[in-house]
Image (cartoon, rainbow, N blue to C red; front, side, top):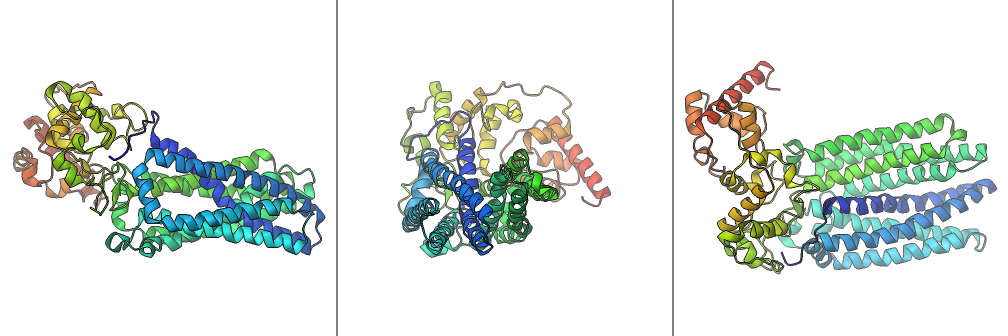
Length: 520
């Protein structure tokens, strides 16, 4: 509301996922890889293993180029991207944790300095001094993870910060500890996985086999521990945040399943590499890295999806509206904007005067300000792809948008604006669809459910639609003529009598089928 909207045609979310996903995959390697370097060096020196030391020098160069150079550039890329995509959230995170970021940047400076001294100190420094720089690198890299983990987990589980606004209440939030241990396990596993890439390029079969086995010692135990910390992490998240993961838009559930499958695939590929470690090929090591990247990225998608519709849960919506009024929020709360109007409140709007002649143009402005943080018109999560909208006229669009927060198990924020602005948004969304309302005189109940109810309800015995609808068919048909009378916050959809009868008949059929299977 306070900043211009950056229009990313293919979706701001996809851009963020690409930039952040690659950075996170490398930054975790920076932590576990640092410990891998120092312990491998100690192992080689203790055993007078010149071959292993020679390989480690080569691996160190690979490590520094990837973590320091690419990691630093992609880290700046994240700040640049989030500053354009979600400037309000970025501003809040900076102001809330300004000293946290300052501490992390000091650690990062020490981290890259120690990494460069470690790289260029081979054969120039005494072994103990060289190892000391390695320890400085690892400690500062881990300290960076400790700080950033507190800020990232705060966004999902702010805990008591919502009530007291204290730094440490938000930092040491309910998911802090399990997330830190989970991510540290990932970093150790990645240290072993990345070592297989450089190991696969070695021509000495005996050396290659030793490195592969050593890398597996880092990877296998870490992968086996991950489910333990993942379970702790899940148990620390409020159950209400998991509702959407089991709802009509189960993005979190899907990606959680994908993460488990890819994690299993990663473990399987590591074990395959141990069958004939002396013959590990670059293609297998790269495939292993890609599968591991998919597993980690899937976990990040889970974390992002269960947070919806918030950027900071119970505080700031993804569209930069404040859920909880706070000092300094600029008045950009749902209640304030619903009263004053979004076109009059948002700072970067061209069509402020809403008339009958500019409904679609004004609706496009409202869509850009309130919806474009998650949706596009014609690309990523594009409105045009939602076939159900083609069966809604403007009155039905208006009614459904009025209860936007109920759709898909509360994964969208409440509409903020006047009733006239809601009409304008309805007109714009309608212009994106080919409006072809059904003309069937005998509508199918399942179709009626999918087109009018499935946004908020599920075909399950415990859903309100099934538990609250009267058992008597005629009573149910009559009750459906006024949905707000059944439940006040429901939209006032005007279903025809044929549609209501078809829906009641279908619900009865579903009830009977579920009763016959024991409610499953």
